[in-house]
Image 1 (cartoon, rainbow, N blue to C red):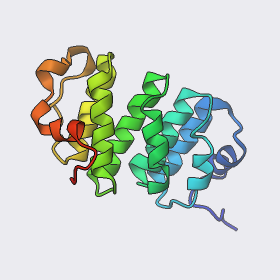
Image 2 (cartoon, rainbow, N blue to C red; image 1 turned 45 degrees about the vertical axis):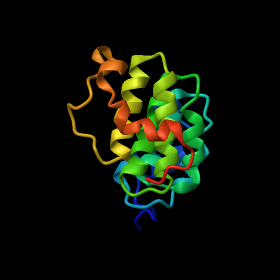
Image 3 (cartoon, one colour; image 1 turned 180 degrees about the vertical axis):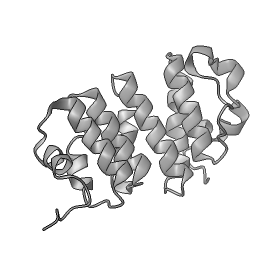
Image 4 (tube, one colour; image 1 turned 90 degrees about the vertical axis):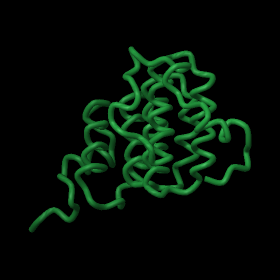
Length: 174
């Protein structure tokens, strides 16, 4: 008799009961998000959005918002843009960009949030992540268009005219 889920029994066990530590849990979330064709495990992944572990939160937001494009968790991802941990913030930015770029709702709001973070952020890592997410959300990102964080310059590399309308208005229709 075969296992009733389309993931391994161990991945299901780790997701359901959280055993194995943060690394194994983050790997289980990644596996279910990217190797499993079903969203039926979203409720198990969602429990980990507030995990104390960075890797776990990062994988959870990428799975729920970036891969599965579940609107229910967009507000969580937006809140995560302002988390303390830079890796969690950049994962939230990437997830929101993917969500919007693939037809997700709330594009204007998401681009506005990402633009505000981009404008106020001191970290070039986050600036680069936000700008890539904005371009992804707008369907304009191409690999190589945005320098990596260690070479990113917000004043030089950002097309402020493209995103100005998102910074200036809360009523933008994208």
